Image 1 (cartoon, rainbow, N blue to C red):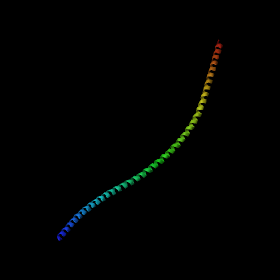
Image 2: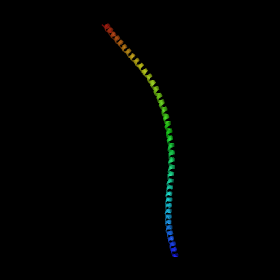
Image 3: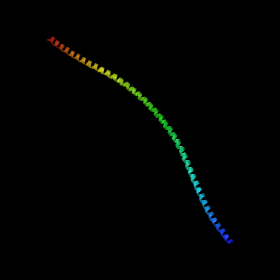
Image 4: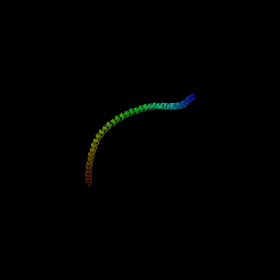
Length: 145
């Protein structure tokens, strides 16, 4: 009976040792997993740091780009205002020139009319001179005969 008890204790001890080794192997496996996950966490932390740095740089870049765009917009608006003022000035000048052109056309028309009248007068005077010259020639011829 003592031998049986002893065998039973030995059997329990062996089973306990097998169980203990299984638990140790499982513990080692878990330790290995924890180490692996810690390494992954370290890699992810570094990546997160890089991403945060990239984000910070991008935000700074966006702020600068926004400031540049606002400056370009301000300059564009100023240029548009200047162009509109220039267009108004040019329109005003065109209206003034158009009015002056109308006045000049009236003067030209009047001068043409005057010129036509003068030409007609010259033609009449030339005809009169021809008549006088013919008469003088007749008188001269008659006087010489």
